[in-house]
Amino acid sequence: MRVGLIVPRYRHSAVARNRVKRRLRELTRLRLLPSGLPFDVVVRIRPEAYDAAFDQLTADIDRTLAQLSRWAPAAPSAS
Image (cartoon, rainbow, N blue to C red; front, side, top):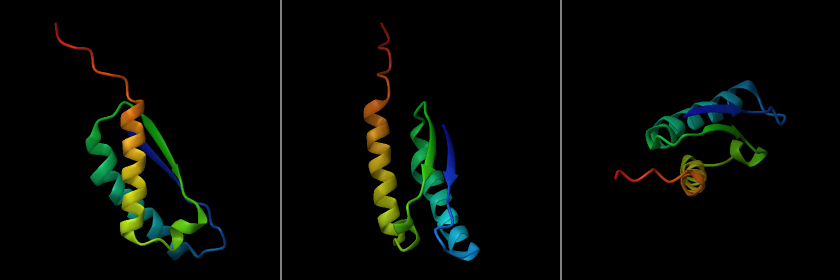
């Protein structure tokens, strides 16, 4: 799995953008990458992400992971 981040300015400072990017990179490392799903993912943040707590971002990433898991092709059974 590869993950790309798109973090537009939305009239925020570089410090705020980098903070959001660091949080999303950490969540990606902890949640998305270990899943081993066969997808390339692009995460584009919305303006609300700048004010979101880490727990809220975690919940959003977990919802994304659940949706990707539903879309993943079923593994072929070993016969």
